[in-house]
Image: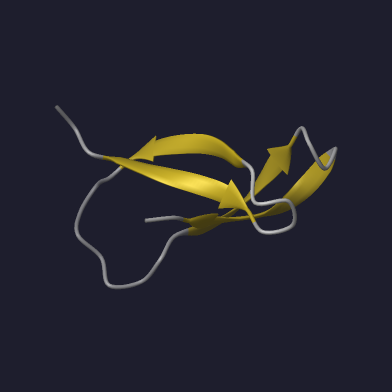
Length: 48
């Protein structure tokens, strides 16, 4: 089973997205995604 990375909104801390992990990385993933709770595009950061 492939590992998944969970992304959470930086404003409301809602965990909205999961993406497949490609490789082990020392930096955390940050993507600009749409948050339905904030009703806009915000930065989503990788959680543990």
